[in-house]
Amino acid sequence: MMQHPVRAASLDITRGLIVAIMALDHVRIYFAEAQFDPVDLSQTTEGYFFTRLVTHICAPGFFFIAGLGAWMSLGNSAAKPALARFLALRGLWLVVLDLTVMGVAWSFGFTGWFWFGVLWGLGASMIVLAALVFAPRLLLLVAVIATILFQEQWLALIPFEQGSINALFFTGGVWETPFVGSKIVLYPLMPWLALMALGYTVGPYLVDHGRPRAAPIFALGLLLLLGFAVARFIGYGGGLAADDPRPLLAFLNVEKYPPSLQFSLLTLGALLVFFGAVAAADRTPGSPAIFHPLRIFGSVPFFFYLLHIFLIHALALACASAFGWPREYLFWSGPWPNLVPPDGYGFGIPGIYAMWFATLALLYFACLWFAGVKARRKDWWLRYF
Image (cartoon, rainbow, N blue to C red):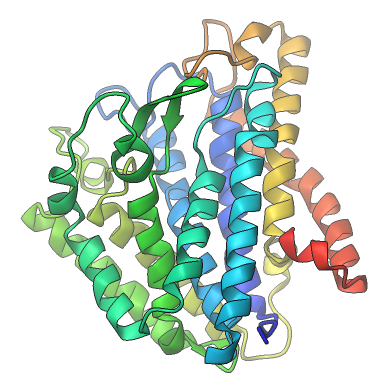
């Protein structure tokens, strides 16, 4: 029988950090006045660049911790069928939600708009991981590390054809779907599955009896950051070359779509250093009050995700009405999202951060309520939220 993992405060706090920072990126999408990509060094400012850079930890964190959580749920080899069943059902549930409900949240339209976003990537990866849990773990670990280390090489073997189904599984980009037309694939399966499988396969080294082990987690984070620095200096692993007078920005400018080796090393390294530090602090009773909101968010991260896009989008529409911004910008149609605001729309960096704090404050009370519901009730369907 699959066991329920121990509720570790440090893991909840780390999840909470991920979703809180994720909300910052999505507030930026709906509220920014900037008409440029924040990682385009030819146009961006330090404020926009670092606002986008810090949010890079979110997606790798989601995938890695989902894999780690799967390992923590596995009590023994006899529990693998139960774990596989749960992963397959939860994965299917996430895929369906991303292609239906979340499409409405992103677009505020009912014309079938969707993209293959993070929930698709998580769900599809869980479905595949449901089969991979039956593979020998050490063999799987070697395969996963090789997949990540040599991603640039094996991706080069995949034919990149605009509109090809390869976009869905390998390269990302646009997939010309047979029935619903052109759709954007932000999270191709293989590169992101590797990060989830990595979390699963290193679980025994990072977790002891359901409790995160601070020292190995922190050490792994430092090792990954060192690996990033080395890979960056030698030019290995898909970094974005840039001739920019701001050397720090150029050094930290890494490729997310699809995630390069340098991207994965930098983001997972930074997240695991934080996770390890919090796990060390978690040895003493209680946790610092500053982490309490993060712990609440991290106890119900999926509920946070479902709610936050609707909330941010609605707040943007309310601000557009109040300040006379072009409201049609907030209604997406066709395959592409609206990411370049028209003249006279949005806030600068201070306004973006103000709206982020307001969003988190509203979400805190909603998440506090739902965390209470999950603590009081043991209905089976709550496991899927």
